[in-house]
Figure 1: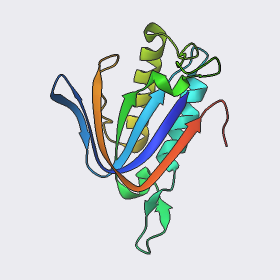
Figure 2: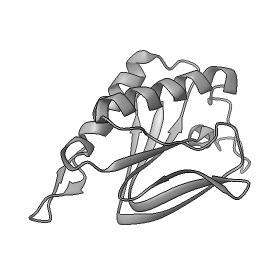
Figure 3: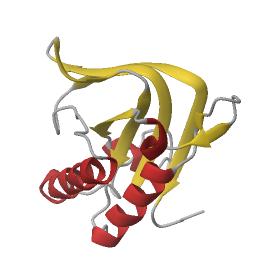
Length: 150
């Protein structure tokens, strides 16, 4: 699994002009799933994201996590995180899991993160043509990959 983490001052996702997920200050999470992903990948990412110290403390130092500061998270499924352009300029998404595989993994990730941070994590609509708007804060953007835990 790959999750692109963006610290935001606000973010929302709309489908057909209707807002389906929205947060104030917190994390926008773009989530990509591979067919080989398991509960172990979910657990590692949930632990890492919930404890990632990228919010400022009173001294202005990035020293607080979602758990420490009560910020929100918005998760959006994003198969394009597994794009490959090795054979030219048109991206291939062959590493991304098909919807029947990735949807339950994405839903389990969202459920696990919601439990870990003690509040509901809103989402877009899986598989829909979504419009994501955000105001980056910092900007702070971090790519997490459960197959390459750095």
